[in-house]
Image 1: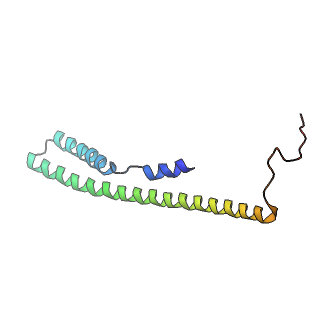
Image 2: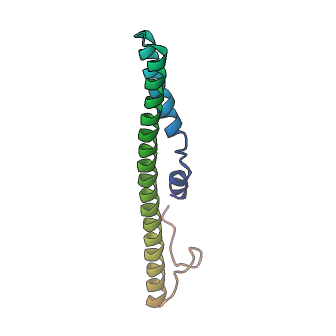
Image 3: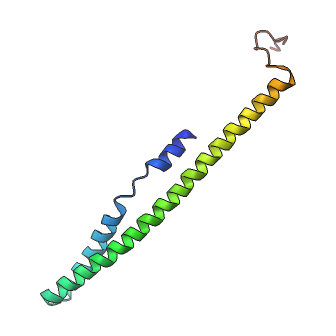
Length: 112
């Protein structure tokens, strides 16, 4: 279970924004190039598409980071709850009358 929690924390979201900007702008640039836009208009369209896709990429990255943060906090809370329950069970067992005997000291006959 610890590896799951560590995997949640290790997710790298830094590449999401550049990938969205580059792929979206490349599609727009290629489309406007083949539609034979004038060079001045082409640069304006490409620049505006960079800004728009940058905003979209940053928004998606923030949303994903928040989602991962919530999942990490949830996993840590579940881990703390499991540890608390285990400690309570251990304390209850000690209060009942001590610990169990090791298998060698128990009076169990082999049933083979």
